[in-house]
Length: 232
Image 1 (cartoon, rainbow, N blue to C red):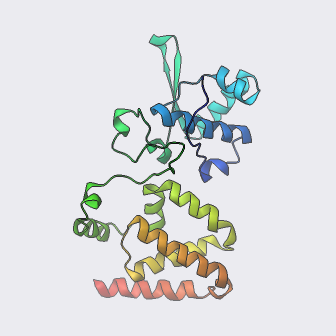
Image 2 (cartoon, rainbow, N blue to C red):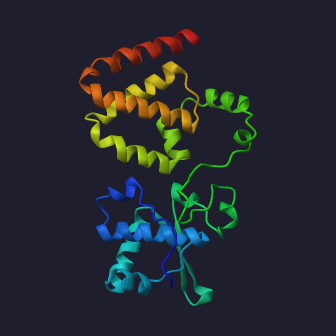
Image 3 (cartoon, rainbow, N blue to C red):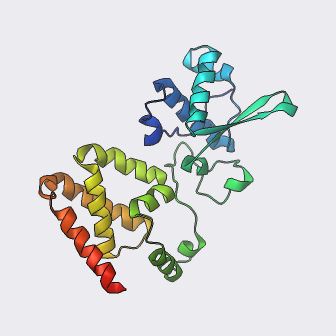
C-alpha cells in the first residue's frame, strides 16, 4: 500500500486522551490521512504493523482503544473475506476526499498536499449572501453557546484556536463564561468568522490582563441577565 498523500489530523480530544497510548494517537492521524482518499480506510493490521514496526496484536489493541473511545468505527465485510473498513467518527468524519462516500459529498472541500484542511460546511444561503434567514435562525437558537457552535461547525479552526490560546489562560472556565457573556451582550451573529475574530481579540486581551478579570465575570453576567429580563 502506498503512503498517503494527504494531511493527517489529530484533534485535541485525541491528543489529550489519557486512555490512549501515544502510538494509538499517531495511528488515528494515519487513519485520517488514509480516509481522505476514499472516505474510509482499507488498511489492515499488517500494513500498520509494518509502518510502526510493531506486531499486529499491538495494532489491534490500538484500533480497539480508538473504537472504544468513539474516535473511529469498524466495519467487517464477511462476504468479502472479512475485509475491514475503518471510518472516522465525530466531526472529523466530515472531512471530504476525492472519492468520498455519497453521504459525505455535500460537506467541505478536498484536502490535498497543497491545500489547507477545511471543515467549513457548504451553505447555499451563505453562498448567495442571503443572511437574513440565518440571522433569524441564530437569534432563535441562542441556547447553544458560541464556542459550542464554533467547535461543532468548524472543528479544525476551533482546535487551532485552542492550541494557540488555551494553555496561556490561567482560568479557562472563567474565561469561557466571560466570553459567552460578552457574545450575548454584544449580540454577535453566530457566524464562523465573527466568533473566531471576537474570540482571538478577547483571548489576546485576556492573556495580557487576566489578573484584572476576577470580578468582571460576575458583573457582566449580571448585566446580561438584567438585559434578558428586560427583553421579555
